[in-house]
Length: 275
Image (cartoon, rainbow, N blue to C red; front, side):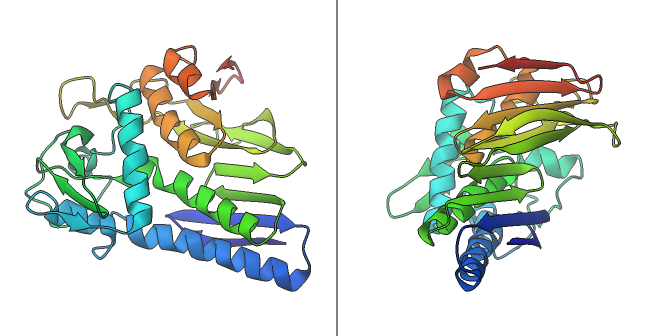
């Protein structure tokens, strides 16, 4: 069974085999429901999402969030710490400044880092500064992982979930992986086969450089390259592509620390890869 739906600002595709048709329908529908829940909770554009409530209110009082949102925040914190701040969800201010996110009435927001986020007990969150979070670098990966978890809970053992290039596969069948290079829409490079793992890919374009002067925006890597990470979970792959874009090298300790593979694909189909 293969189905696709518009979610998370892209098309989410789910393929699954191994059960009777009616059981597969229930499993795939439940997996899409999990992705839709992530969309509702973590959308920057939805004023009723957990993320929007945090950005409006958490600098003035603690905000109670859904356990899934709290889980993403905890993972974001660990990644922020482990990458020396290179992975940082507190980029809403910069993204609004350059027009890639709507203002959403957040005129009080200023630049800052994830260090301003305080994770309290009972899934409560508050900010020590007027920051704005954006889960664009982690929510799709989390949604893919949740969908895979739901499929497994329904007894599915062979499946693929693809959210606009953030992809995870389970089962014994290896899936071919293709990378499309930015600026070379007709050029697709086969990156290999993927089995029981996840992959995510990012382009450089304009990236917030948290290590530079606050608010600095620049294209720090060649715009015709794609930056990919293969990891055990899609959340990890999704997040670490943002680190790879900023560093521009696959042979640094961040990737070995997480046990992932990072590689850069150019329009000329050259890759730099680390185990």
